[in-house]
Length: 125
Length: 196
Image (tube, rainbow over all chains, first blue to last red; front, side, top):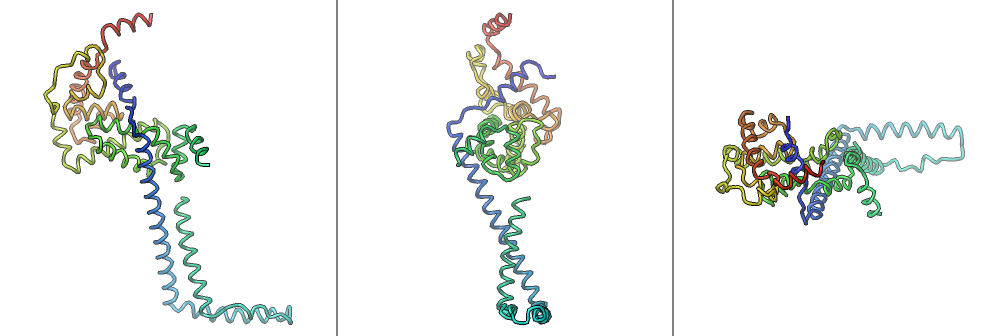
């Protein structure tokens, strides 16, 4: 059991000494926290981007785009045929960019969006 | 408005600030550093760290505390929690630098222990001065147990010393401090009179 002297000693220890540079110290810690956070965000963003790129390259290597293209062409034909039946005068879907470039742009946007989404999710949780 | 935000943070309790910090709000943790930075730096110096070393370890301890702030549930005070982290970090640093074993074995103060100065008897000596009379091992044990709030067993584990050794360091350290920090006879008598 702690005696009076021990309790007094604990009180003495709990009294923080005065430091004239206390504010400088706190600012230094905050700066290191901010730096660590920035580095972490960059790393997470890079990891998300790299993951997205790898995913995209895997899709390309597996001839996925070609299959998507064929499927989408078939789909467009089906939808166009259906649309023509509903509104024979209008041909809106013919103006959509369904070329290979369009698919590439969509993939690139998806990669960037994945990177942002991953970094945002990790920041939140 | 950053000023208003700072003002709002200053009005919050440590537990609330820690909860904000746990969501990644760094200014809230900055406020905790402002409140308890000096206590942590002081503790490390009392453990025997030099000024620069203490500040270095204190910074690392606060960064480590930020990483684990969600573990702080407010059972004890935030200051006590972060002090324990800092004390352990300092010991790990000593261990890395292979100084811990040597320090833990030294029982005498580096300088020859001087007799208690006149001021000690008069109660005018402060804790930092009194701690200088202790050997490194006694100082570490006393500071860890009474400054960082570790139990004897926890201190023994952190210092990698047998429990009995820690207990005897603490006992010897307390005896020395008791002499040096003894309240002046006059003050005690006045205190007694003041309390009726």
